[in-house]
Length: 127
DNA sequence: CTGATGACGGTGC
DNA sequence: GGCACCGCCATCA
Image (cartoon, rainbow, N blue to C red; front, side, top):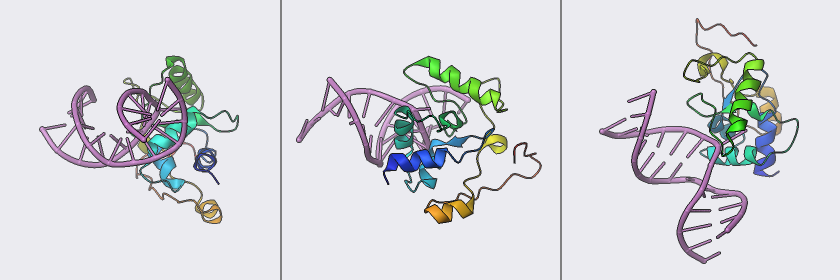
């Protein structure tokens, strides 16, 4: 399986109303420290069932594009899923960040779980 | 082949 | 918070 195909498979696991970082996607796909590759793969992605809008950078911001129209589009799509942006255009990853794939699924398909804990006191609106 | 270019990220100031 | 490096690596001119 190509690196690209693995990346798309991981992105397809991110649920509605959640966002993952490029680095997290790389890690789950078994490609540590290759966040740039994830960005490259998504830029070239033409598959309809890959929710590319749910991947943002580690600062919780929508990454810039050569074509700024797609940046706006990504934000609109996420807001429609219930993801909130701060005034400065940031997403609170404690609230909306993906906690990793279902461990069951990860084990079966040889991906890496993340096991990120929910922060106590932060209501989880989407699980 | 070589150098430049990114939907990146960690570190340091 | 911002900014500058630097490591990263597939693609492309």
